Length: 293
Image 1 (tube, one colour):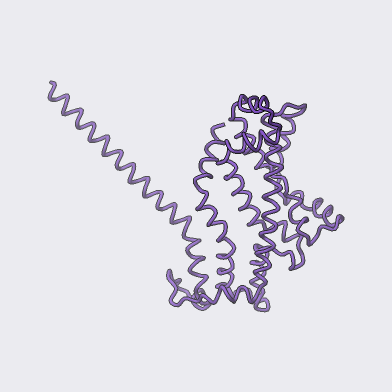
Image 2 (image 1 turned 180 degrees about the horizontal axis):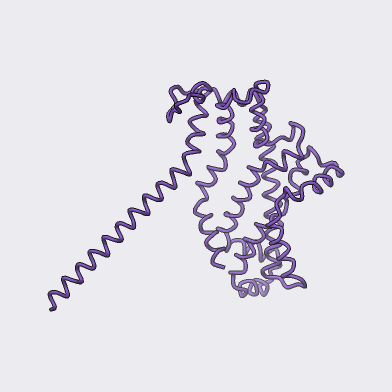
C-alpha cells in the first residue's frame, strides 16, 4: 500500500509539473502574439520611412526595404519647418509638465493630507473633470483665449491644460498610502507644507511621480486637437499638426509622399519611445502602488 501511495503521489506530481509547463508555454506564446500585434505597426512605420514611394505603393508589400532611402529624413526638414515644430513641441510640453507637476502635487497634498470644508466635494469635481473631454469645452475656452489675445502664443497652448485631474488623482492616491505619522513628525521638526512635500512625500512617491510625469509628457507631446485650434500660424505649430501638413507638400497630392510622412512620424515618436524604455520600471511600480490604494 505504501509503495502504491508513493507511485500515485509521483504520478500526480509529474502531472502537475506537466500542466505548469503547458501553462507557461501558452503564456509565452500569447505574450509573443500580443507583442507582435503591438510592435508590427511601429516596425512597418520604421521600414516605410526608408522606402521609396514606389515601393510603398506596391500591390505586394515588402517586409524589408529593397533599397534604403535615408534621404527621406532630410527631405522632411526641407519640405516642412520640422526644426521649428520640434522647438514648439518641446516648449509646450515643458510648460505643461512644469505647471501640471506644481498644481498636481499641491492639490494632491491638500486632498490627501489636508482638512477643509467641502474637501470630498472638490475631489469629486476633479474626478468629474476626468470624464469631460476637451472637445466638449473647447469652444468657450477658445473664445476666452482669443479675447485675451492668447491665440498663436505658447501661453495659449499651455494655459487650458496647465492642471491635470489625472495627475491630481494619481498623486492623491499615493499620498494617502503614506502614514500620517511621517507628516506629523516632519511638522514637529519644523517643516512647513512645502518642506513636507519636497522632502517627505515626493521622495517616498518617486515611482508614481515618474509615472505621471511620463504620462503627462506623452500626452503633451502627442497633443493634436488643441494646438490645431489655437495655433493657426506656423510659428507656433507643433509636431503633430506639422505631420498632418506634410501630406500637402506636393500641391495637394496627398498620396505622393507617404515615405516622408512615415519619416516624420518616426522622428516625432522617438523621444517618447526612448523615455518609455528608460523609465518603464518606474511606470509599472507607480501604477501598482496607486492601484493598491
